[in-house]
Amino acid sequence: QRPILRLLSCPGTVAEDLRRDEQPSGSVETGFEDKIPRKRFSEMQNERREQAQRTVLIRCPEKISENKFLKYLSQHGPINNHFFYESFGLYAVVEFCRKESVGSLQNGTRTPSMAMETAIPFRSRFLSLKLKNQTSEQSCIQSSDQLPPSNRKLCELLCYAESIDDQLNTLLKEFQLTEENTKLRYLTCSLIEDIAAAYFPDCVVRPFGSSVNTFGKLGCDLDMFLDLDETRNLSTHKTSGNFLTEFQVKNVPSERIATQKILSVIGECLDHFGPGCVGVQKILNARCPLVRFSHQASGFQCDLTTNNRIALTSSELLYIYGTLDSRVRALVFGIRCWARAHSLTSSIPGAWITNFSLTMMVIFFLQRRSPPILPTLDSLKTLADAEDKCIIEGNNCTFVRDLNRIKPSGNTETLELLLKEFFEYFGNFAFNKNSINIRQGREQNKPDSSPLYIQNPFETALNISKNVSQSQLQKFVDLAQESAWVLQQKDTDRLSVSNNQPWGLAAILLPTVPNRRSFTKKKRKRSANESVRNLLESLKSNRTANFTETNEK
Ligand code: GTP
Ligand code: MG
Image (tube, rainbow, N blue to C red; front, side, top):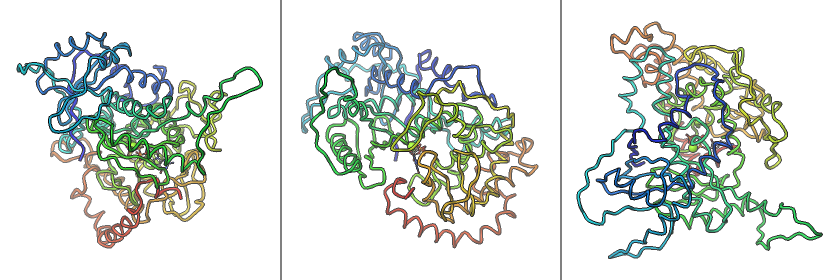
């Protein structure tokens, strides 16, 4: 169970300005928005990381005066922005203008003394604010709920929208990560980085996956990558003379063993000393070893990996696709929510389609439009310059990083059309013989008999959906056909709002609606057998810890 995360708004903060400036993708414009120069992924990551390093997380008393709180903290230096949120208690995220302010605040902070227990002294940027005198403060913090809407609220919002385009943009607006939530994700990585830095002073802990690839939904997990390249590459600094120095190190037989050893130690450290890190699990035998834990104060479920640079590159590629054209995110959010509503995806690993695979399917579909809405990965490679050249473990990961060099698409299709066509396209896709390949943007013969074959864009001999069973694929195809059919019915249009009937997107997010019965009758007969089959398949695949074991063998 994740704790409820409620953000409390601070009117007029820099955060709001940033939200206005940096999140045009939530706007309802359709198509390529080429007015604003877009930041490179690495620029965005570096800026946010630097902000996070000037930021502290403070557990606050329940009742607190915002003005007094800010005045107290300003003794250590000017504050750039701040916000409050609730997650089993009140927390504040405070970003100072200067990094030195954090040190100054820490220097005036003490380790608590406990009556019954002993505190392990640990200096971090996660603090607790106590009132010296128990005067009851008037709380003047305004609360604004940043959770995604309940199903009921969502249904209402969708029913009152003007069009299916409007519905998809509403869904995106309600579910996308807010500016504050994004800040909290970078701050959490930065706090973990401080802990890992005790062993590896030059390490960087970078968020990847949906937290940064523009497809993150409120409540999604926080994937972290412990980057040790700085430590590894220090020796490349040129020195004069005929000598070079190398560190004396311990050797192990393989990269995998090195990864396991590093994660094992960091996992122990998080468990013993990491403030707010609970439920630490070391899943070191997975294909991609990881440490999983809950960061209580932020409410994030975290997966920490290392030696997983390709996943970071995949996130960068998805960031480019998600930022290029505002229709991409709206469609991906719509399809992800649709899949979740019908239990096609699950938070438990198994024979199900993952959000990552679904996103690849949407990208592929958008590459297949005429004219294409998204470029193929190969064409992004041809736009690359020398700086973009990137080879990871022998895999060519070169593609253009500067978004402003990618030509806009001339395609002006509406989201409504794209949604319907997505279901048509995959409802009739020859999954039995073809694979999906975003590198070339066309179907290819499947190299093996996996029910669903989506080529890994960088490790091209691998299938990212190897885990998906035939019955789960069939369920996806059936639901795609059914949804295409529902969207084509006249009575799913805007007019039926007067009868309070869910229409358009709302109609396909519902498990069943009466007017679909004729379509689904035949299919339902199969469902009993299918349930048994699914159960067996999930039992089989649950032996593995996460996707990393089930996929890509
Ligand atoms: P959420 O469901 O919102 O967490 O989406 P996500 O994209 O963050 O997925 P997840 O947390 O499962 O994985 C994090 C990242 O790891 C993804 O964005 C991918 O970059 C990578 N990844 C996930 N699954 C696979 C896979 O099957 N193969 C490969 N190569 N990479 C994967
Ligand atoms: Mg994730």
